[in-house]
Length: 363
Ligand code: PHE
Image: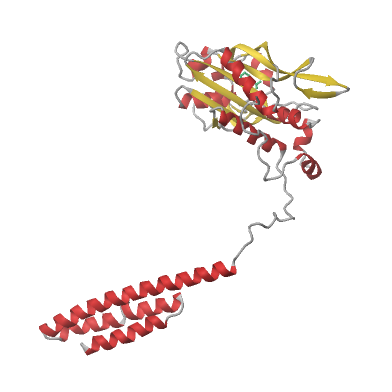
């Protein structure tokens, strides 16, 4: 008994003397470890007579628990001390201005994409994504482009070498020429009702003041029961008003052709041109901003949706073009020159919010 009491005094003072986590750990090993003091004493139990073994054994077990609790308490206290020290020394002033040397700017395309997501999300759209390297089936065939039909050339496609490892029917690869390919992927994997936008890079070999071989599109797709062109028109109207922040921005639909929509229409918004300048809003002229239409029944069928039960509309815009118009950027090619002076001029501060005051259509 006295041995146990002596050991207890010794261990308690050892634990209490540990003034950091490392020495506390050493104390734990000394007391409770395999070669520790308590374990050592436990080993002597075998040589005692039964009565003594019983009392000493119980006392040792109790001691073990007491020391473990003491160590745990000490550990909590030491950890708290460490944390308090850190909090005291690592203070920071959250009211300090942003590092003056942080000069990065957000590219107008990125800013515009943020705005698009904000507006469409507020209208209940989800964002869908697809690959830049697409196969001919998703980019064309499923979208009702007849095989060998010149409509495929209409999009100045970059054809890639066949991917021999791809599944049969998907070996012919292209750089996607439009975000409409994402519609196909989404419809194959999801059941109506569908309300998505897809955004991203698209590729066509064309290069001049208003065309670059890589540009960005945003495209909306809505599929449901009893969807009609009135919904398409209302949706485009709400969206363009919110994006440009212009109340009653006139929108005009002009008959057109796309293989994947029927009927199809090109979308114009009102503008005025004076002294070589262009102003968006009610005016005496129109500016084309994108394509649209009711999803062709063949496309629905190709994507596993019954066209007798569901209808839908789609529309797509060039994001770069929208950014140019909204922010008065005259030459499309400058977007991709990586000129820091240009970015400083046209770029946005990282903490700028998407410029759609409430995300709601302007009233
Ligand atoms: N995919 C068409 C293009 O790139 C645009 C479009 C999208 C037209 C959706 C109709 C519907 O030209």
